[in-house]
Image (cartoon, rainbow, N blue to C red; front, side):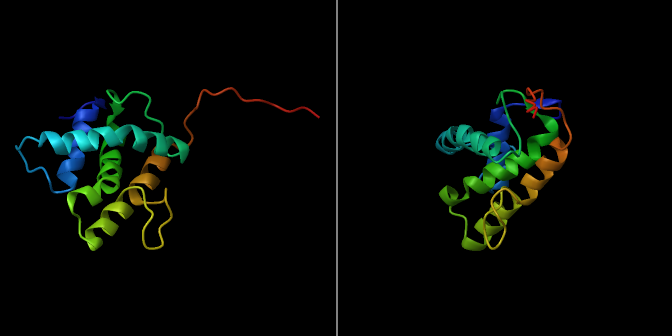
Amino acid sequence: MAGQYRTSTDLVNEALANLGVLEAGQAADPEDFTFVNEKLDAIFRKLNALNICWVPDPSNIPGAWFSDLADIVAGECATKFGATPDDYVKLINKGLGGAQGVDVGFGAAAKSLREINRGRPTYEVLYAHYF
């Protein structure tokens, strides 16, 4: 499903597919879906706090961010789904980072999101200090 914007439901399903829990054409288990869906708010707040990206509306996730966000969500939820230690490190470092010498916020997806958003206007008020 391509489009300019995607929803949090699409994001959860993509993250479950990245974890290997959801096969093509298969419906997500309600418990798995609920677990990942409940983690989204905390993950979005963490991304905002790390100045990676800000997702103001989970129902309108920019399509350019989608695969990177799915990798981050999959990495953050990997322990619940029985990822082996090697798979856990791969998922974490592919997403947000924070394992085996990769600092938090410097995983592959986090770097990609930073690059996508680099140089974009923030529309925040710029305060000037005159001396």
